[in-house]
Image 1: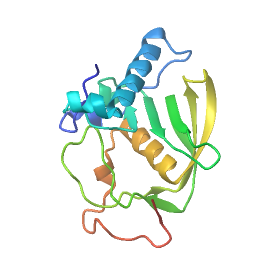
Image 2: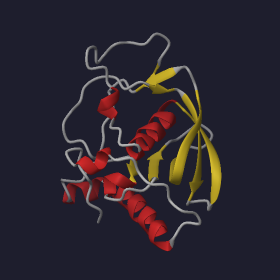
Image 3: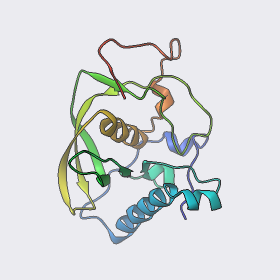
Image 4: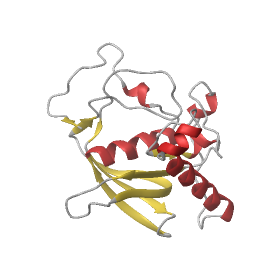
Length: 185
């Protein structure tokens, strides 16, 4: 089982290294371990037996102890057309190549598996982004278009690869300031 690096560790503030492609077996296995951790974190029975494990929807490699530009995302994301839909990625070297001017934020604020303390305030992010990355789940380079919650999750995890934590983006002078036109999620 992976051990989550906490925000008190200076390693979490380092910029991560690009990952050589094709992906090595070791890096592929690390992505599998990260995804397994996420899936277990979402299992209420597992969390009951392991109270130190918190539920997560994303995990970046530095949070699991490796300074590599890799991340995994997995969460239940039903739509009317696809009631069993799950959003899931295992991304290598993700890069935001397009972003919107319009902003979005989570009404309840963001949280993080690496952050135990509560940090109240709004984290404004781009409402729409396009991310270019190698997706280990499909075995190819992809362009992922994300809006709203999906874009927030991707930006949160990509920030980890640059040593940025969500609370760095909260306005220290006015944590609950409203940006006109921003989409509340």
